[in-house]
Length: 215
Ligand code: DX5
Ligand code: ZN
Image (cartoon, rainbow, N blue to C red; front, side):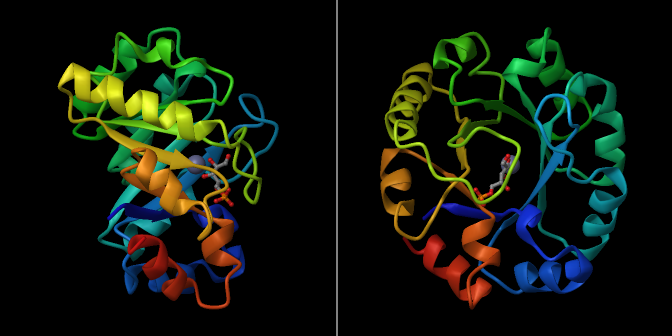
């Protein structure tokens, strides 16, 4: 059974409180919070005040996905806002090992996200240090995009690398997860499924979360 992390990016921002309540009362264990800076990705989403507000609305794990340049400048700020998991992009970090240590030293779990075009080899030296690898299955920046099928093989290869290295690193898959493809994604090795559009544009979001979780 995978951990489900609904992405608030697809929620109705005028009704964030009810979106939080829905997730609180659902089988989802994590909240996925997408921060975009308009530089690392061609879109701007939300930032620190929203995360701090969501933090107050839930006891669940707040999984913050930073799609920003120079994320190391904001590690403390996101800790203070209430992040439990802080994920930075391998493509955005010149000193990834240092960034991971910085995140962990503040008591958060450290995640590393990898874009579709980036080879897994970019993670070779840090797999044992990261708590989570977020495999992007779309090009980051927008919700509601189509899952890139080649990601399945990438997840399988990453799973093997993690097992071979003896690490406990979780694999999170982010982008285009649906009720139709979730079983294959979990079979490939995913531990955490992010789902935005699939959850928030469904008739019964909590039921959709339950179905995803039981896949
Ligand atoms: C994309 C974000 C995702 C996004 C997923 O850049 O990182 O977390 O919200 O949305 P869906 O599930 O709609 O692809
Ligand atoms: Zn995300």
